[in-house]
Image (cartoon, rainbow, N blue to C red; front, top):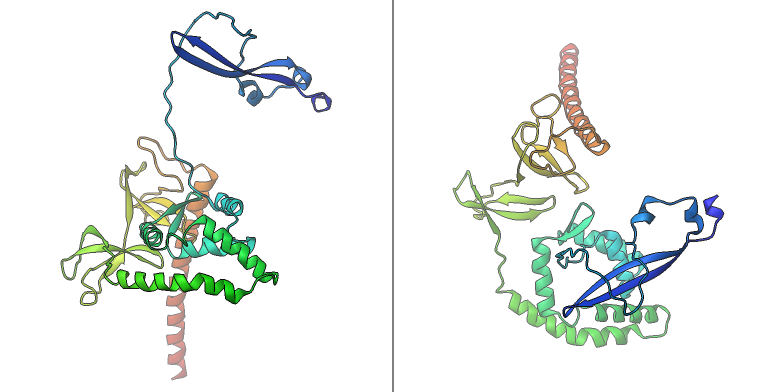
Length: 326
């Protein structure tokens, strides 16, 4: 019935009150016509605006209460894949066929990492970005990239000669590359030092990036080739047993949290969750996401055990068969 009725009509009001050299402002609305809201009103619509009584210009109002509030400017939200593609479209950078490969490339090269759908720059990404901006400021900017995209479109349409475009770009760019290569010969990357000593030579191991993320390596390479996984932990204890909570990644590079005492099916602590634990909060794996993660971990353990048993069985069977043949 309400869907067939007319829309509600509001007057949006902005009130400015001057008093003792101070200016107070309030925004709200007054309803002029109820329309469908005579029959049906949602909670969101009730709380969307503050109600302001009807006032006349120049009217003297009486102070009843002053409520002070402090607010801080928040930084813009980090990009997700969707918001990054939207921004690229707005800036005229790239084309629909290049968006996915671009994001995949910077993820694979560890310039960024995806944390809860947000794209976060890594230490390597910050260093590379700084070097590019300092040495290729004329190229690493939005206006240049958008301009090149337009020229490529003209080349594809046969309206512009591609050799001329490349020549105009690469003649000055080539000289810049030569100069930067000479300067970067003296640049050395300093690895972050950990607090873990090398078991073989005693040096303090450093944090490096590999195909599967961060790992610990001995700085004495190639004399000492010791390396091992880097286990990241958080300061909050396990909500089940009080042990140390580790941060691990799935094959799709998604973070999850697991207790150091979680040894698999029925072994030690059972804590494992997609969400970071909160201090003092009890853990009950009753939501669908955590149960799904727990089942994945359980299936992985079963698969490892089954494959081990199968190998042992096959080996015994082969041995028996060879004895019979003799």
